[in-house]
Length: 524
Ligand code: HEM
Image (cartoon, rainbow, N blue to C red; front, side):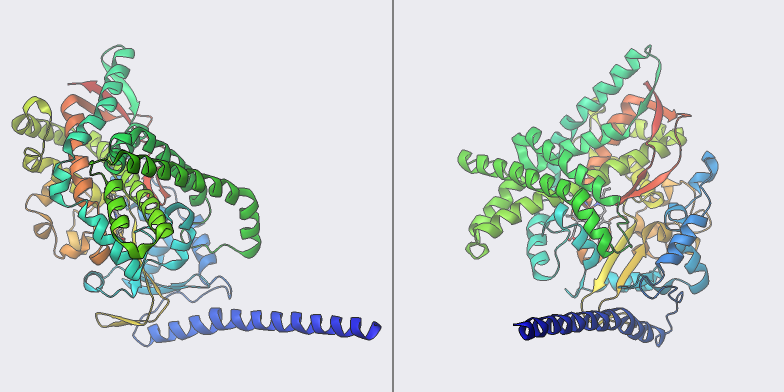
C-alpha cells in the first residue's frame, strides 16, 4: 500500500515538473524566441525601435515611465488648440517617433508592435484587402463581453458576411431617410437648453453639453436599430456604457492582464460585467421576440438582421440569435459615443471661433426653411461640413487604426511577420506639418473648401473614419447626424467657452473632453 502511495506521489511530482518545464518552454518560446525572431525580421528591413527593457513586459515599463514624466497640457486656450492630444495621452509614441522616425517597432512582452505613420505605408495598408489583416486579437478578446462576435470584433469570413449586411443599412440613400428621426431626436436637447436659459434669467446660461449630446445620439441610434421600440432600446445603451466604463479602467490598450490580476478582476468586476451582458442580451432578445410576434413591416436595423438571419438556414438558431444581439450591441457602441464626442469637440471649437458660428447661421438661414434642415438642404450646408471635417482633423474621437497580421503579409515594400500589431496614430497624422503645411495646428475649416483631396498632399493621411476595407460603416450617417445637430444648435443659440471649461482630452476607448465641455449660451 505504502509503495502505491509513494509511486502516486512520484508520479504527481513528475507530472508537476513536466508541467512547469513546459510552461517555461512555452513562455520562452512565445515571449522571448518569438519576439526576437520578429524583431530580427523587422530589423533586416531597416525598422528600428526601443530595445525592450523587461523580459516579460517588453517596453511597457518605458511606456509607463515616459507617460508619468509627460508634462500636463497648458490650459491656456490659445495654446491648447496647438496641442496634439496624443502628446499628453500617448507621449511614448512621440518620444520614440523623434528617435526612430515614422515607422518603428516596440514590444509589450507577448506582442510585437509596429508604429506606422508614414503616409505611403498608410496608403498601402489602406489598399491591402487580405482577410489576414484584422483587428488585434489581444484587444478584441478583452472586448468580447461588450461586443460579442459582432462586426467590430469579427475577422475573416465572419466579418465579411456581417459587413455586407450592416453596411447596406447605412448607404447614403438609406441615411437620407433618417434625417427626420434625427431632427425629432434633437428636440429634447434644444428645449432643455432653452429652459436652462429661462431658468437662469433669460439672457446667458451655462450648460455642460456632453450628456445631452450623448442622450441625443443614443436616441438616434435607438431609433435606427429598434424603430418604434427605441425607448426600450435606450436601456441597452445605458447598460453598455456601464460595461465600457468598467472595462476601460483596466489598462485597456497595451497592458496585458497578469494571472493574479485576472483572478482579482474575475471576482471583483467580471460578475458585474457578466450580469450586465446577460441583461443586455435578454433586453435585445425580448425586443426581437416582440418584433417577430408583430410581423412588422418596419425596416429598422433589427428587422433587417432578423430577416437576414432567418433567410440563411445555414446559420442555425443559436447563431442567428447571437448574430442579431451582437450586431445591435456593436452599432450601439460604434455609433453613439463617437458621434456625441465629435459633437462636443465641435461645440468647443465653435465656441472659440464665433465667426464660424456666424457663417453656419447665415448658411442655414439661406438653405433651410425655418432653420430646420432636411435631406435636400443638408448637402448644401458646405460650411457645416467644412467645420466638422476640421474638428475631426484636430480632435478625432478614434485615436488609432489598429491591425494584426494573422499571417506573414506584404504591405508595400514591407514584410510584416505574423502576429505583429500595426498602429496608426490618427491625431499625429492629422497634425503633421509635412502633410498639412505650417498651419497644421490651426483651426481653419476653409482648408476643406474644395474637399479633402485639395486640403492635403496625401489624402490618405486624413483618416478620422479609419482606413481601407474596415472603413467606418457609419461614416455617412455620422456626418449627416453631426450636420443636423450642429445646424440646429447654431441656428438657435450663440455660445462661448465658459471659464468652467478645463481642457483635458481623456482616453476612454475614444478620446473625449475629460471634464466635459461647458458653454455660455444665449438664444439668437
Ligand atoms: C464621428 C463619428 C464616428 C467616428 C469618428 C468613427 C470612427 C471609426 C473608426 C476610426 C473606425 C475603425 C476603422 C478602421 O479600423 O479602419 C470605425 C469603424 C466602425 N464604425 Fe465608426 N465612427 C463614427 C460613427 C459611427 C456610426 C454613427 C456608426 C453606426 C451607425 C459607426 C459604425 C462603425 C462600425 C460598424 C465600424 C466597424 C467597421 C468594420 O470593422 O468593418 N461609426 N469607425
